Image 1 (cartoon, rainbow, N blue to C red):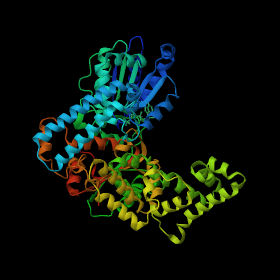
Image 2: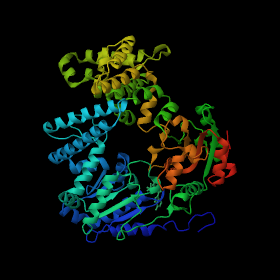
Image 3: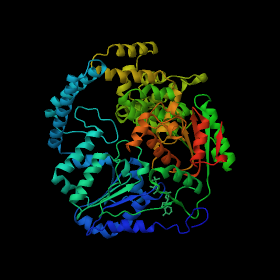
Image 4: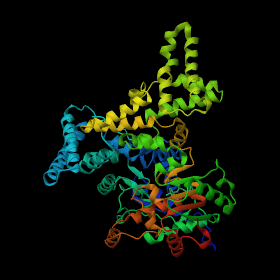
Length: 637
Ligand SMILES: Nc1ncnc2c1ncn2[C@@H]1O[C@H](COP(=O)(O)OP(=O)(O)OP(=O)(O)O)[C@@H](O)[C@H]1O
């Protein structure tokens, strides 16, 4: 080892990779548990092991029509593993939800039986609570739930096949929700020996990446399968308990690893510079004492903690100044370059929306539960009309790129659809001119510095038939602004039963959205397409960036799940925290510490944190006492 804590031999963990390859022998399979810190190359170990093993097992897998299953946390992680394993068809890479659905899809009668029992149990529980409980809001909610579940129960016999979309919302009569799919998969695997055999015959090796956050019931089912089928099956769990940031993970993972499992270990961090590794080691130390070493060629790196008074300073201005300050202390201009390669992380989406300038758009739609997932992943048709059709066509016309205008219109506009062009026969020129004039009308909306609302834009699209209007927006396409207010408030006033209430919530959300400035669409589009410099603390799990700027502001985050102020010593622990600590139960402070570990460990070169605190001095004292930072690395604003 060198003086600075770096290890001379960067291949010190090669033994772990060899151990994993050994486990994946089909004639003598062994399960393994690879749990190692951030940036230790876990994903890389997984893909390298696959590359080594595939040539040896290819013939066997083909002959027995088998595959190796890799379960990852996000679709992006799936793409990464597929890419790294060169899209080998013998490796089935999927997210947990799509994997489980692929196992249970088609077992309609069994799903019906499960759901019938589940609904009956739920209804009985609710009725019992209703008998014991008092009236008021909770009772009304229980009654609504009982009605909805009873209706679903009554509908069951007529369902021919269940539907499920692993990547979206599932609200249809015959659809299953995400939690149900996981529970059904876990239940079938533990209670139906045939399902276990089918699984193991299809996938003699299952590797689960980010297993610390993989859904508890399914993890327990996999342990059960492994225990019963260990001579034919290898289960590989990869992850880091310190990076468990979602409530649905199996908290006890890693505590009772069966003695016949292999437990390869990795000690090196290949991602971060020495100073960042020192910091994340300090943050981790009280949890499990695991410490990482830097590579021999690791840079020194820079970390800074800025502390501001919460609620007092304009965050945008403060953060701009701090980026400039980081450029100064690191000598790296990318920090202050507005187009620079920098990732800014805030806890909640509304915090990033505010900083990127699409707060009104975001807040108006985020209130509706049914719209939230689509809002965050950019799949709401009502928004895509603007983000994927209107916005690009206006930008192309404004920049004089007529080729791009034509491509967008051909792809999305009914005016240039095959049917319309065919019907126009020899008169196609007129149709083309009509479409072009419609685009002109859109562009005119922005003349003389005007700032149209989404409703103004929707009106032009509807009047010109430029693009089809998504269902959610159809009720508004011929409403004036005044009528829209009336429409939305009328829908609200008419709340009576469950369905109406849900409908009115979405209607109100779309109505409020349409009244917000259209100019916010560009920033929103960049954000959901991953092109913005901002992301959330949870959203960057598994990823890495040269420069990372972490924003911590409990007041702005509005939540209670990650109380950073308590973690940083600015606020005292509550009586419940102390009681939980005594009973060895998880506290919010534990959760905040793990999330902080995840965000800080993304940095490949330099890292800045800004904490907006009610008591900056206490924060400073705490981080110095805990040796997270040195004096010169902490700046009070
Ligand atoms: N043996 C190695 N030699 C050189 N670079 C490596 C090695 N292993 C991993 N890396 C690099 O280190 C970085 C982190 O690797 P990887 O993303 O696989 O880590 P991880 O353990 O999955 O991280 P995390 O848990 O923090 O998401 C990547 O840039 C990867 O290419």
